[in-house]
Amino acid sequence: MLKSITGTISSCTIKKEGITNNKAWKIFSVTINGEQFSTFDAAFLDNIGKEGTYEYEEKNSPDGQYVNKTLSKYPETTIQAGTTETIRTTDTVSIGGDAGVATIIRGLGILRGDIKRLEESVNEKLNKLALAIEFLSKTPQPNQPASTPAVPEYNQSEINNSTDDIPIID
Image 1: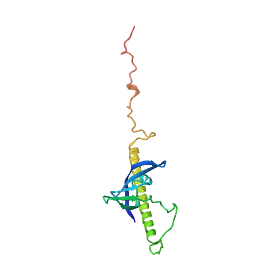
Image 2: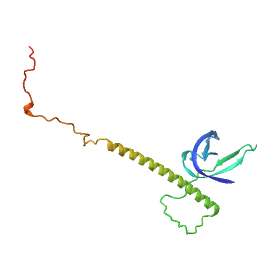
Image 3: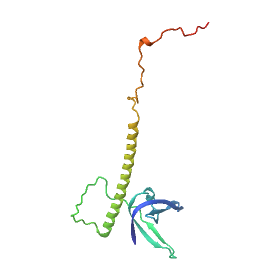
Image 4: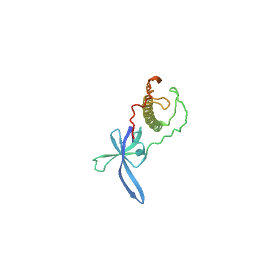
């Protein structure tokens, strides 16, 4: 029976790898909300830090010592970019029973993870921009000297053009 977990993928590492019938394979160990899962799907490796709803199957070991939790394939988003459908809260929508609800919940979890990742990216870029603005506001610009050096005032009559104090060398 399939179960699901909603959370963030905190880690994904290669647990075991090999070659069978001339085909390479890898088993990944995935941690979601502190729980350990196994999967053959490398898509989990590419989505560390992503929040979503993930399906898995539990099987007891033959000796009953442990429960193996195997993740299903990484969920794919079925909503196309650029879709602009609006559902009002008063609308009645047929979504195909429990499977449809699970698909919508999974899709919302993926979207929530995408939005969170985008917010973090935008905030990081805004912080960098603020630091650059602060730095530039303190740095003198090329066409504006930092300060004009003081030029001493002088009077032509004060200049001594005499050469009397220069020694004569033979």
